[in-house]
Amino acid sequence: MKNIIQFLILIIVMSSCRPMISNNKDIESLAGSYKLKNGNKIYQALSEKNYDKIVLNRDSTYLLYHAQANFSPAIEQCDLASRGKWLQISKNVISLISEDNFLKQDGFKYELKEERKYSQDSIYFNVEFPTEYRPIDLTFIFNNSERYNTDKLYISLPKKKYLQSYSISENLIDFSLNANISGTKTYRSRILFDIFNKKIDTHKNNYFTIKLPYFDQCFFEFEPYDHSLIYRKNKNTLFWKGLEWVKE
Image (cartoon, helix red, strand yellow):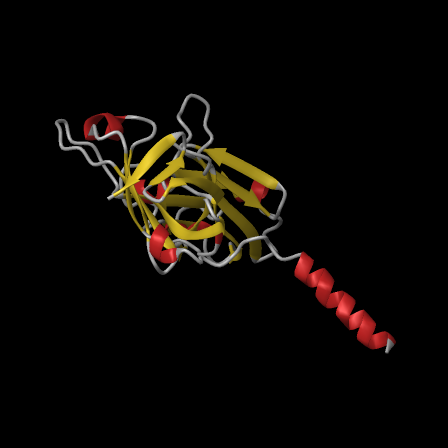
């Protein structure tokens, strides 16, 4: 009897710890495409809130679109600002959770080419982006102790200072990108990008090319949302980011 009571208490406690998010009960009435009420696309494309519409799909996914404007000179534009899942948490409140909260995005993927060349007293890194280099810092941490920050894509470092010992073949190297640079605009709240943390044989090879094939403008500007709340004003209107979105 004592074990049964303990089991029931455990079930109650576990149930109380679940997030207070209901299933999407009103999918049919909520799903659809909602256009930003301000219809001036040129203004929207150049503003901080450069959106066009948000689409709530019936499979509980969402797509947030940028406003696209055709004018000269041409600027690099991305169709999607964000994507992920939406949840109805009450009758008139919707929550957005962007895909980076539950999916490893392609922008974090990398290719590492290891070679042995030049001076064996140094370790070299060459970082390659798919498009024009973004205003970000590169950070290398060696064996959880020595740190090196730079805004250069090609660097040469003395092994004696940054690696543990010539007798140790493998060294733990952490590589990340930091967009929080003084004097530059940090886009939204995505600042730090952790690329890899791995042991590398720095005795056998000393020249490393790091390719980031998907770290492009659209990945860099992706907007993360962790339960961002949208208010349902009426059956055809949403209120979000201080703006009204009207169902098409």
